[in-house]
Figure 1 (tube, rainbow, N blue to C red):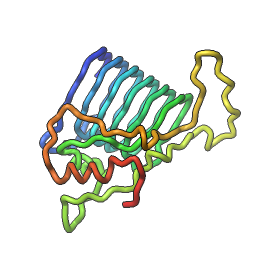
Figure 2 (spheres, one colour):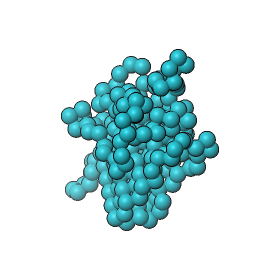
Figure 3 (cartoon, rainbow, N blue to C red):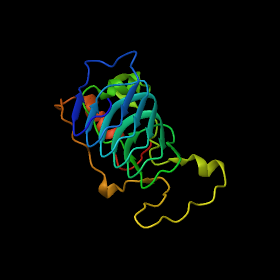
Figure 4 (cartoon, rainbow, N blue to C red):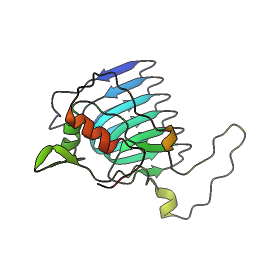
Length: 212
């Protein structure tokens, strides 16, 4: 999905998750909304401006590179953000997100969407495990969205960046969206009154981390 401009793209949920999902690349899009409501192997979102991108379950790595003023929503086993500006990531991840390079005014928050089929996609991506006594009930690792690690600062004693000149946005460490500003994201797909969808709502989309 490359070079979209003022467009909306919807790939609605499949009846069941793919056992061999493809990689996803969203690149150089501007002022667009992209919904990939399915499981993928890995995802790269690169060079996008003023976009909203929603992805279901990412089995491997989600890479965010050179994005500006974007809202990104997904569940992924690993997350790396590089050189991005004023971008918010609403995510579920069992590992610490990694923060590399010159990221400025970016924030992390809990995963905030749900739709029919998402729980099965999370299981396929190994982001959730069915209860052996009741497969409709899923178990999740704690969401580490709020434990983003600045790789360069934690690995080397780098001096702080110089003060910005007029009009620049200062370098900032990873921060989180405040609970007061947290909202669910409404998707353009019909909601079915399914128990698994409600369970995903309850366990993944909460502004506060909780034990599992």
